[in-house]
Amino acid sequence: MNIINPFHTQCIARIPDSYPDHVPRSPIKTLLDAAHVLAFAGANGDIASHIENELENGGEYKNWRAKMPPVTPQLLLDYQQLYPITPTQMTLANDEVINHGIMIPHGQILFHGGQWKGMNAVTQLSTPFATTFCPQVAMREAEHSSKAYNKGYIDLMVITVVDPKVKAFVFDMDEPEKGNELEVLFEAGATIKVFSRTVMGRNYPVYGNPQKEIPTYLLEATLS
Image (tube, rainbow, N blue to C red):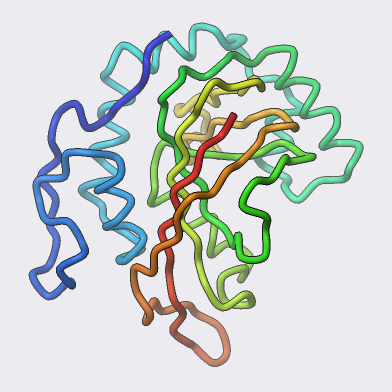
């Protein structure tokens, strides 16, 4: 299997001139540049649509999906649709990733949104680890269930797969409920190494009572 790079064709994206200099300008040519934009802005429809279109029309994503069962196992649908789930359900979902997953190519870039502060620079994960092809999706996941509001920050992780030791399940982007998440779920045991954390903005709005503004960070990491 080969690396999926949605930016093998450049993306013309509307990026306001008012954004600071550290936010890349159009055209967007790399996944890292896309992550910089999303870590600052939170959303960019042009970038998100470009990634979706490249996956839909590019042959390599179809090759990855061809390695998956034609019908997504119910336990993995439950993982997506009912999360958070019980420890027993998590173990069963992890077994499905092991049974049906593939080794993601060395060098593949994926994204994860969350709150990583306080974690070790090198962390071996005891549960499955969700990633996505799209940094905009990762930002939404970081905000989901008021996580960003309660924690007071967002980390957008740019993850490069390096000599992976764990399998991953590639979800179908055409699934009716959660296909838009463009998810790749790694089995438990993945090792995450974070080697940089850069502040991208300090006034990202999150909604609650009261509304407040929080910092956002871009993390670069590897997964093996």
